[in-house]
Image 1 (cartoon, rainbow, N blue to C red):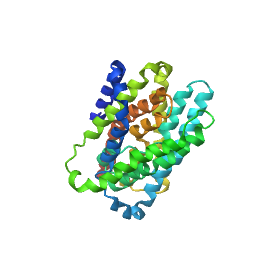
Image 2 (cartoon, rainbow, N blue to C red; image 1 turned 120 degrees about the horizontal axis):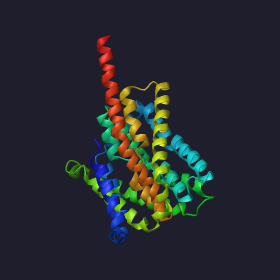
Image 3 (cartoon, rainbow, N blue to C red; image 1 turned 90 degrees about the horizontal axis):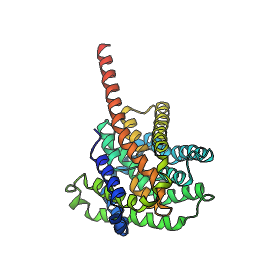
Image 4 (cartoon, one colour; image 1 turned 180 degrees about the horizontal axis):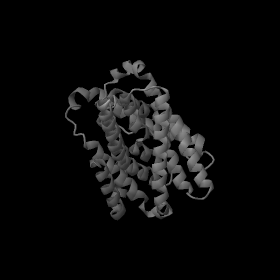
Length: 308
């Protein structure tokens, strides 16, 4: 259950490392590719689902609090501690912060939520809401956290993110009925692979600045994902969420949108892309393991219930 997305991403990274020159030449088309990804994310969304918000207020609120309060604070505290201890460098710290403030990814997180029996309407509302608010929240968070560390244009970031997100959303409304049933579900992963190939090829000459941090990035990604899940498990029990409500937000909450992360990375030095890409690979590897554990746990519980 490793899946096609991870294969595409790893293949794209390898091409970016060994054949970087072509990717650099293609870099002007990245905003259009990212717009296409947003378009593919929202084309099948029925925004009438927002009328059901009141029915899902507890799981949806928990998902949003996790994504925009718990995760940014967690990533900042751990990243800042590691930076002060000289375990990581500044580009890696900036990458950690960027990863923490981007919205949830649409494709894979919705697939896993559905496979785990999660209520797909909740997962969909969570993912789309975070994508739509990200042009407002991400630049603000990055400015507040990094204003003393690096210089960047928060207003330009807001404008670029807004154009790349809201124009495709508007287009999707006009063509929704014609295209929504005919789009190949793997098209978004292929486009994402192209974006990552271009991003890696642009930064490959400076990867020596961060490549020594590969092991710590892998371990850190796992720790951050596990701590996020522990927070969700604890709070969802306190809120007495149903199983389908839990599974609707658990994976989407830590599944970060790599394409929007790359939009933000363009405002910083190229090597900043290192941690978001590593984190994305780890979340793609972690999700099948989480799936297998959850399925085994559910099967064991069902057997115990039958025995009782």
